[in-house]
Amino acid sequence: MSTENAIVIAGQSDGGLTTIALGTKQIPGVLGLVNFSGGLRVRTCSDWPQRLVATYAAYGKQARYPSLWFYGDNDQNWPQPMPQQMFSAYHSPHYWRGA
Image (cartoon, rainbow, N blue to C red; front, side, top):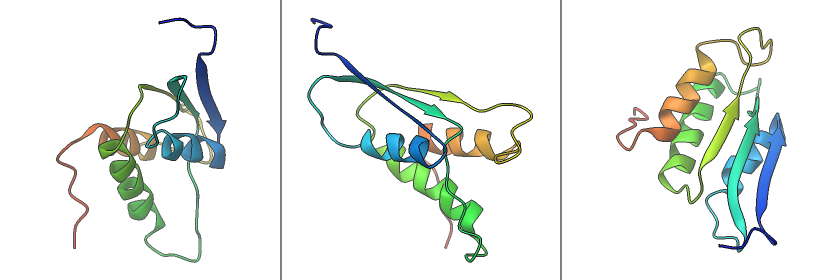
């Protein structure tokens, strides 16, 4: 494959989540995705953490490209174990979202 028109999509914060969402679409030339501390907080929704994990699970089931994820151990927006839960849900074909 020629890399002349190769594309790597990257995003940070809301853009990281958007990058992962975009990875569910077939886009000519895209080779991979980079998620830098991606996510979205909806503080008016009491169960937003569970919904965010479920969203990553849904995107993972439809993923078309390899992805590289970056979250820091001292990330104040996404403290552990949240990034690990999102990553695991994205890569799990058997993720259960609950009732």
